[in-house]
Structures are given as structure tokens and as C-alpha cells.
Length: 506
Image (cartoon, one colour):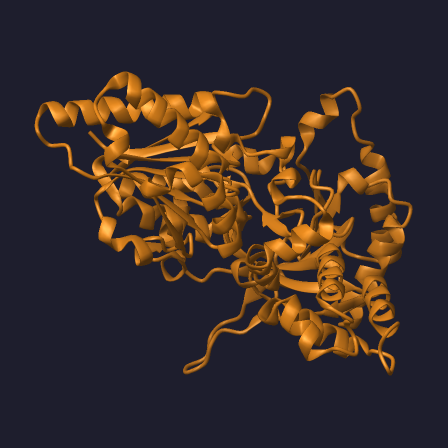
């Protein structure tokens, strides 16, 4: 049995985890199941997000492709003769769960019997970026006002520290100083455009825009070049509600503001008229909230991590009971599953109209939404990638880009960050030759970090959060002629936020 204990740094901490508390019950369950330990791989993570999509223990089948017959697609079957027939995942943070042995034993029994266990499936297996959880993520931003009303707090309060680093005044002054230096050089040579464009993707409540505009106006008054008069600041977000809040925050600057509701993964669809005209594309805490696949390298073979959303049976029973209180007849588990799938498509307001017997009003539908989100889990399996060149990560980016990262040493599992890659490459098209893209986010800057820490997905309030594969974005950026640099966020210590900067190579 191969045991991969990833959070090894914690073993040297003041409160080291008890490995035996996690592995002991698992080994007992495997022994009682008469499993061939030579074909078992155990991965121990410390899942730091208290709200996440993982069970304390889970089983991931490792699948293999049989030979393809003429005219047919390859079939996916258990890998059989491979060294690892299955991977068992343990959350060490919850490793002392007294039910761990029983949970593991139940998973092994269900695997042997070909059953689904105590799970209510909500979808079939597929790439992580196509999972139902991303439909719920979109629902959160689309109906953020209803969620905030129900919880009684704004979404920024769910972030570590309770606010975004984007509104830091020192950071804004530093950026503006760099912009002024570029604009001064262009003005001296007669090459400065009359209109100076800045684009912000993911504007939040408008705090960043207000800080930036206030500081630019004040610094420009000292500088005396009239740059504020020529400035056009474009606030862009997926959520109309967020844009409305942001416009209120920058009311005194409205003569310099335009707002766009757009998909962050394809900004040039709405902003194509600004191609090669934007001096700054500013992004904060957006990439970690965009759909992503994961891939893993095991024993020299590359697999896609496929996911499948489900509700644990106990949680499903609780939700059925919640719905049945006001229903004229008991609600079945199948009806519950159908409602869970329908909710992100309709939204709570339309769902309340469509099922008045179950939801007295919109508030009741929002409460149901919150309960479902809390209960949602993901099962996983590993499916071989038959060719990296056939795997599209984002428009114009294929899987071959992953090869140097996957083959950088020992087995590794990493994010592909399809949505972030699409947004990044599309945003580069907007940049002026002397422009730059600046992004504050949760970046992994060394592939080795994926071998030592859990990097998501987790849950922030009603949305999804994942770390972003920095080496992958840097590799893609260089291929497109851009230098990409990472540095810790310079204006607040002790956090995980990293600043990425991309600009045309000299």
C-alpha cells in the first residue's frame, strides 16, 4: 500500500496531526475487506476549507482504457493490472472522526457490490469544469442580492480578513505611479492616445474602483498632466447586482465610468473595441472563482480527474423533510434531486413560482438553496487522457502545455484553471503595447506546492474557490510573448494573496 501524506509540514508544527488516527481505522477496514493492499493508494490531505465538497474519507477508482476496436470509441474499465487499482482519500483535519472505519468499510462494500452507497447522484461523471457546482456558482453571482438578504451579510465578509486586498490605497498609488511613468514617456514622444483606458474585471462592491479613481484624481492634481480628464474606467462583472452597487460607490466619478455585464472568461467579446488600447487590466479574486478541471500524473500516466455531484443520503433525507413540511404529499428523493438540478437554471424566484406548494415565498426558496449548497459533495474518479494534444484547456491552448509541469518529478495532481486561462489569454488581447495585466489572487507559484497542500475546491459562502496554477499561466503567457511575474502582495503581510503581473516582453 502506497501512502502519500501531503501536509508533511504539519508534522513539524506545534500540534502535529495524529497519522495513526487516520490510517489505523482505514487499514482495519481494508484488512476486513480482504483488499489487496498492493493495489491500494492512500492520499492524506489537510482540507483547510471548513466548507468543502469532500467527505472525511472517499474512494476514487483509477480507470484504464482497453484496446479500441475498429469504428468504436475506447471503453473505460477498471485498470486491473496496474499497481494502483483505487485511491482512498482521507481528510486529515477530520481524520479523528470516530465513524471513519465504518465509512471506509461501507465504501469498500459498495465498490465490491457495484452500488452507489448512501448517495443521491445529481449528475453523471464528467470534467470538473462542467460540474453542477459551477451552475450553483453562477447562480450565486446572478442572485447575490437574495443570498445576502438571507444571510444578513455581504459577500466580501466571507473572504479571509473580511475584505478584498483590491482596495488597498498603497497598492493603488503604486499602480498609478507606474501608469503615470508610462504615460509621461509616451506624452514626451507624442505617442500618448487622447483616451486612457483602464479595465477592471470583477468589480466587487466598487471599493477598488473608488480607491483607484480617488487616488488617481488626487495624484493627477499634483502631477498636473490632466490624465484624470482623459481617463475611461470600465467596470466589468458577471453580476448586474454587483455592478449596480459598484456604480453607487463611484458616483462622483461617473463621468469617467462605463459598466459592462460580461463573462470574465471572454472579456474581448464585449470589449473588442478596446483591442490593444488598454493600459491596465486589473483583476482581484476572480480567477479562483472560475471553472476548472484537474489532472493528475500517477506512475507516469496522465489522468483527468472527473467529478460527480451528489447529496449524502442523510442530507438528502433532511432536505426531503424540510420540503415535506409544507407539501400536500411527501416529497420523494427523486423529486428532491430534480429540484436541486432545476434550481440553478431557474433561480429561487422562478422556482418559488413554479412550486408554490413547496416554497411559500422566495425567501423559502433561498433557504432551500443555502441548505443544498451546504450539503453538496463531489465524488471523483481518474480517467486516462489518451493524448494531451487532444485536450483543449482553453481556446487556442491545448493539453501539450501541461507536459513540462506534469513531468517535473513525482506524481502530482494540479488544477488546469480552464476559466482563468481563457480569461487571461483573452485579456492579453486588450493590452496596449505598453499596458499590463495585474491580478491579485490565490496563486500556486511552484508545482511542488501541489504535492504538499490541498488547493481546493472549497466553498466561500455560496461560491466555489480554487487556487490558480501560476506556472501554467506563466508558461502560456510566455508562449504568447508576455513576461509573467509573481510576487507576494506587497501591502499586507501574512496572507496567501499573490500578485501576478503580465506585460509584453522587451
